[in-house]
Image (cartoon, rainbow, N blue to C red; front, side, top):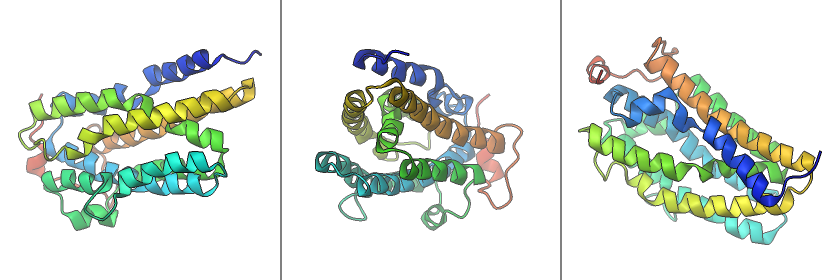
Length: 250
């Protein structure tokens, strides 16, 4: 088996995104096309908060075992992006503006007590992957950021156009993310192209990105199963009010 060139490896990674990224999931189509109820949007935001709050935990674990100071310097910007320089700053704080705007009690969101079990399992699996796999695989798993600017632009346009309970201020988290994601994806892709030079390393990189796509897909599978069809909400998970569930479009 011959190793791929750097451009061919990048193309193979982008092909995984084209086929497996969660912008293709039916739940996202409901969300972006205005066919989700307010309760379904609330459930998405509440469960996604766990992913957001665990991203800096994942990134800190990657930094802790990296012996390359240049990589550590580049990667620590992700911690600032999510955690902020204080409690009122950063991506996590802006995500809470989203859940606040959707009418969710902040204490309920941050307690993490009403998550879908599959959300917790999927996110924890991602954190464990980054802690346990090679540094190359851990960095490669972040490359879903290659595809996130497109889904964010679709999300902003679709949600502002279709939901009267969504405002630009509610969606403040997403305004800075495309630039951040592009910066981070460019760094990670360059790292992967320079360090994955053998067929086994390249296969590991491709598998890492596929795993991360599976994590994001599994999170939406759980939301769809609980809040769309068949509508089986696990015991203890968030239950929207009946009026919020009745506002979906056809």
